Image (cartoon, rainbow, N blue to C red; front, side, top):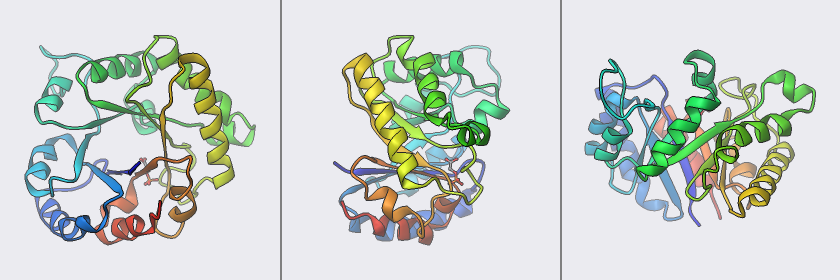
Amino acid sequence: MKKIIIANWKLNGNINFIKKYSKEINKEINNFKKIELSISPPTIYLYYLKKKINKKITLTCQNIDINLKGSFTGETSILMIKDLKIKYIIIGHSERRKNHNENDKNITKKIIISKKNNIIPIICIGENINNYINKKSIDVCISQIKNTIIKNKISTKNIIIAYEPIWSIGTGKVANIKHIINICKNIKKYIYKKNKEKIKFIYGGSINHKNANEIINNNNIDGLLIGNSSLEPNELIKILKLIKI
Ligand code: PGA
């Protein structure tokens, strides 16, 4: 199975950046047969990036509205994302939970409309530093999954769970492999017990080419969600080169 690498640009990039970035990545992408690279630029640039980037690279949207159409100034609909043939959508990122009122209720709605429109949701979960110190990481992650997917009887087929400890995002502190595997196994076990289904599990938080090796080459982990390091094509390529399985 191919490892999935999501490059989350967050609120970065412009036309010039996309031109240069695409050139660099397009030159290299044919060397990576066992990897699916998906790029997630700000929504406004999805269309332009799609025109510039090699067709082997898929696209991911950073956010959608819960409404499909109508009087919702400034929003983007899942139907528009489907229209552009975008493959994935990031839902429940901790930056959105913190700054944009993303909560279990609207996360659930976003998951449901994405699945209905055949866009694969990448559902972000993760604990804050206090939960981590108090050994509550598993409880927090399980409750985030329970309150969205399980309570609402959403099938976990074609869903990706992105484990992103909040204390690790953008801080330079990557979670250690034992902790990640422990979270991964507990989540997989919980979902299997409830749904009899398997999920894909990826990790995100301060990944760079120096710390990615052990994580990405572990059999339990299906991929990475990369923020800062994905903005530099050479750094991203260095991470892709580490992938051996
Ligand atoms: P980071 O971001 O790699 O910059 O820590 C990860 C993410 O928020 O997806």
